[in-house]
Image 1 (tube, rainbow, N blue to C red):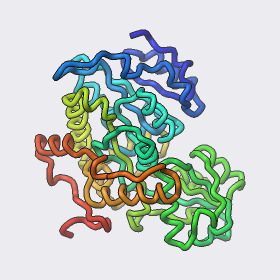
Image 2 (spheres, rainbow, N blue to C red; image 1 turned 180 degrees about the vertical axis):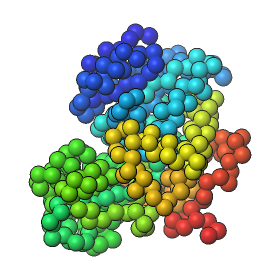
Image 3 (cartoon, rainbow, N blue to C red; image 1 turned 30 degrees about the vertical axis):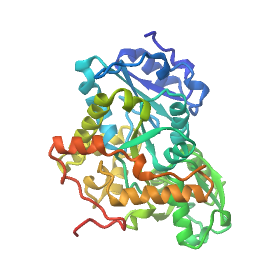
Length: 385
């Protein structure tokens, strides 16, 4: 397989041990959002001949809906990010000679969808809404593992802003990174305060964009993630709202999906991937490893102190839970309906058929982890509590 020239992929970060020089150069030079054209040189599935029973793939391509930063490059907020930092996925497939390639997208979920649509990824770590949009448009995927669930959202305003509550956002200029897993919980939160999307002036800005706009006061408020805490610490922002300690229906949900094509061609490799991801989730959700987990995530750019604050008082098992429990399934069903109602998705579809729990259940049974993680009811309360 020829070595890739990283300058062919503006905005795309590529990581594979075999291409370390290209990776280092890519991480130094790439800065714009990933686009469909940037992926044209990746190898589509159609380039491979049909495998025989029990065949192993030559390569597994994993897309991540966030950039990788730091030294060494890493991403944050999920058990899969720990597996990446530790090299556990590569280690699991080393005996079969299968290469593992990681692709990072600064354009988040929507740009991952472009790569999936063009059959240039096999697995993807993504939020609920972009995956729902793609599935509604006919993209054949299966959700196989949850990770990075119940992630908090924050709303930041200038420190001297007269706004006091979410309801005060009526008529204001509010930024939101549309098309990501921030979108639906934000609309859900606005609705809880009697506001519709038309009641606020929503501006589509990515993380760098809304942080800059908040600093220059070009917007009245930003609905975002922990990045808002950076400006708060500088005295440039006041936190108007956080979902931390509030109802989990206003939190963000993420998962790992596999294309139906890959799972059908390589069921054994799919099972091995899920098993390794579950093992990684078990290690990452062990409280004895909390410091290492948070400090590993901090390498991706968000300060350790902010990870510690965001996770304070919450067991790691809550957000690094791989299970599609009743709470998460209900959230995805609600998200499908909400996305269709807001005309973000073309069609409704059966979430129970979309979530394929066979690989997860096999892994949990083999590893004796059936009861390790808490199971949450649709209302967000722990089953049996």
